[in-house]
Length: 379
Ligand SMILES: *Cc1c(COP(=O)(O)O)cnc(C)c1O
Image (cartoon, rainbow, N blue to C red; front, side):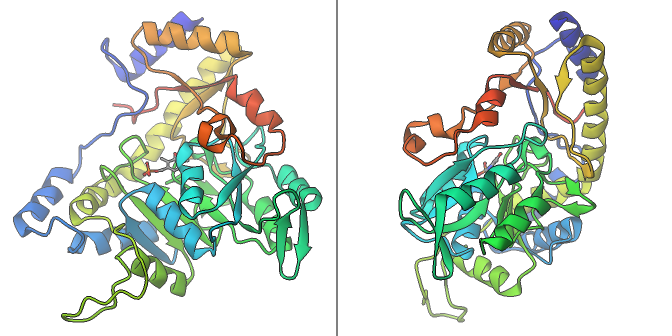
């Protein structure tokens, strides 16, 4: 059965060589725009491609404002600060995510609290969030505090796993009841929509990543999305060292960050964005091929939730147990086809072992069974 998977992947990617999990493609205007930038000498954070890229990402996602950053992690960090997360507070997030999600919380001087995910969406469970807030927090004045640690719950940070939209309307409803700002880690979800609305545009703020392994890349880069004009202005200010505009004076009104995306990266982004609709189309077609193979061979593939149009950034299978998972990984890697287990749940990592969590039943179940399949845009 694993044999037929290898044959399928080799047929899809038309090669006998090593097949990576996700490689970028540069078949459009990438070289042209990059040469433009080099010729102009404006390779750094000042230059026309940065604003053009922001405007085009805003248009594509439907966000009113988009602010470009050096990485998805920087976008998340800035978004959390703007949502009001302060040192000594807590942010509710999921343990089934890439470490950057929790790192961004930690950079704010805050601690992550890990809530379980749904098996169907792989995203934060509405029921688990509601239960945690109802049972393990108490109201003091306008805010809710963790009964165990005494810390204020400052924000909620769900993630759209592998590009599949989580139940964001459900999460928003719970957050509204507890007056929690919701920040979306939409790092993996560029091109994904739920009920026609783009991921990263539901919450107060959203963050996208353009790292080399994401659906499109700027080499390294990220984007903050928001509909709030003031937050957008603050995002730009904070990510450009909080310098007050002035023809010659260097006055900074607080400690800002050197987080602005360089023109060079933005040029790559503008070119990649032109190809994004085709990438999404091809990845959805690839998902369909994997889905049919899975059905035929008795495997369970991870499919987009109802009402969602996912970018299928990374395709995934849910295998029957950890033994089968390890056999699959060993076999495919031996055949030079890269597959990968999901991230180690963050509550197992040394930095986050002490953090509060809710038992994480589905997270641990999924962590033993999920594998990612080669998902680069097909030839
Ligand atoms: C990729 C990713 C990030 C971080 O993005 P970088 O651009 O690599 O900093 C954050 N969260 C998730 C879930 C990601 O997959």
